[in-house]
Image (cartoon, rainbow, N blue to C red):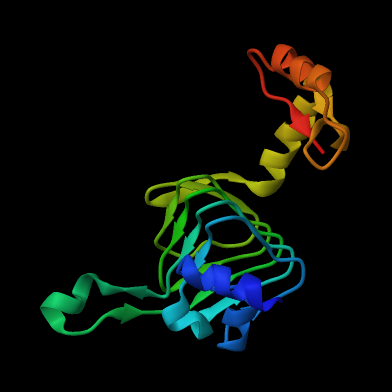
Length: 180
């Protein structure tokens, strides 16, 4: 971690993953933290994140809830545990005292206020189970058989050209596709 990166994070009011780990947060292998993810720095030692976890942009993981502070003089706090092979969709909020099991998918813009077991897809506000993970993935695999599928050359990481952009725009006019 460079000093410059650390300074930029602090200017934006953010903490790097490395800084939060040094403060007590536990993180497994292959943690993907996209832009704007907030991992509660005030109680980060109450956060445990497993292996192969991805958090999409602007996810919030909170170990505290100050809704009681004005009236009771205390803020609620609780651990947040996220299992292995978990995806948390964009702009979702995970509240204190929540455990997400292994192989959980959290739909975008969900508010997770309670714990969920392994192998479920959850979504909504408050979040609820909408499918089993294996059923959801089976359905997506079936869709991939008939949908346009694109390799890395159709991404900013690859050899994206104007022609490939136009191809995607045409092929995805009224349907979902998949990209590597």
